[in-house]
Image 1 (cartoon, rainbow, N blue to C red):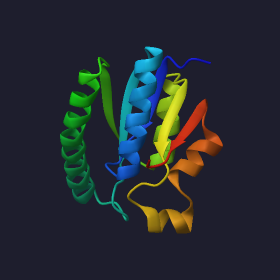
Image 2: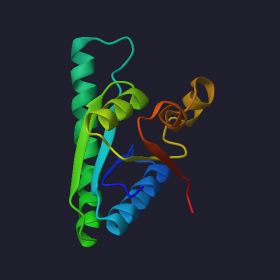
Image 3: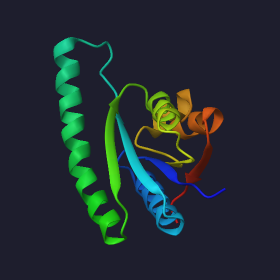
Image 4: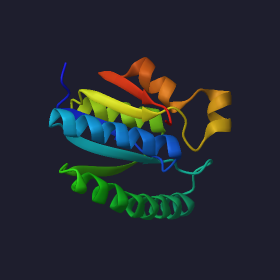
Length: 141
């Protein structure tokens, strides 16, 4: 199977950066389209004002990070599409992969929420378990 649509999850962590580099390598080798998704999680319990402020801040933060990713992709001849979604990370990644008929999802081994993931289960574990396509978990080299 040669992937033509690759989705990389990105939370700004070192493992997410490794996942991006791996996805970028595959995109170059396969001539695939590459999309990066970041997921902003609303505060608990959600209030309208706090939620809007948190999501605006998260969107600005990810858009700044995306600029660096775009430069890296452009240097390798890959057009990069980026998205910031809102909700539970694994759920949003899986939904986007299904909606865009991704052939491959690339996630980092661990993200920013390592303690929480240790208690509740990691995003990468959920994406592997429920992915609508092949999933590659990238570890730091």
